[in-house]
Image (cartoon, rainbow, N blue to C red; front, side):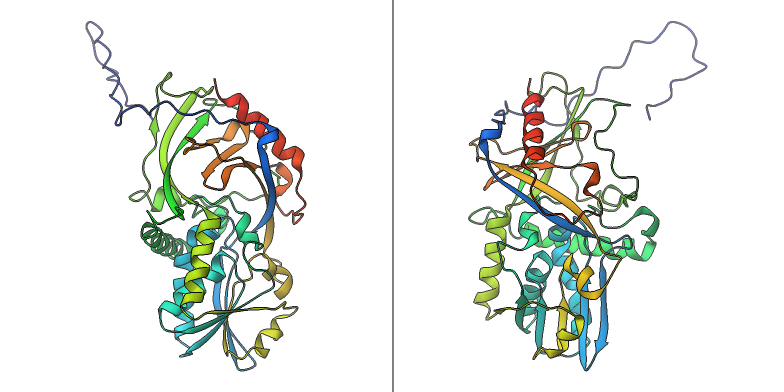
Length: 376
């Protein structure tokens, strides 16, 4: 809200105050993205495992085994992975176990297994799919710890405290991965475009889709760089309003390979196995099991609280000089600069409660065409 002017002032009108100087120098000229359908090299789909009440992280006794459930992280799996692993391992340590089974080899399963190894446990991963075929490998790969993490109605103080603890623990770990070969994690400028106040938002969403908890700005303001509004002419975008802020990006192929290599180097083992019922966890040689099956937990456990939210991405041919991302809510655009290609996300109103993982190339072509129109 703008500051109020003195309503009772009299006399000659005071001169307008000069506009505040920008906090940072204007960006160097940006390389426009070569956005055309013929540059699409991959179209992928995954489902985010959303739970209105937030992730399930709790222990259950079953036939002499302890099952630590750790699933339902919505679109925040990679972002919360390290902190979520810490929460799960608190429950694992209570069992006194020296050997641990982890079911699932995605973002949550792999980081939990690795953190358990670093605390001295012998770990074996059981998974139906391995990298790079696991659903987590098809995520956007951007720091988004509050993405579809819970509905606003379920964001109780206890949950918010746990979420903040997970987010901060993960953020600290990601900073230790900066500067490594292959850039598994890196900071990039993102440009947030808008058509101005009152502009109609494209793909407003399914009426069944809840209002999500907005936690990041309120609880992580001290570690989240503030966005700076750019003046017209200081950017190449055709938009009424443009803001710039830095944001971490995960180059998922390099990052997941790094995690897997570390896990194997520490003596970890992976066994291909498909589970059809939770009782099958009790057939494992390890008596303590972390269930990190993500969206698959819904069918495996009969947990109706897990709601799939479809997400489709396309990757464009990597382009030298394009090291920035952008988001344009009014045009349904989100672009992430990754080393394996420029990722363009395609969303639609029917994504909520949609488990269909069949790629729809037309959606991605339309998103790429919208991206081409963004540059002046």
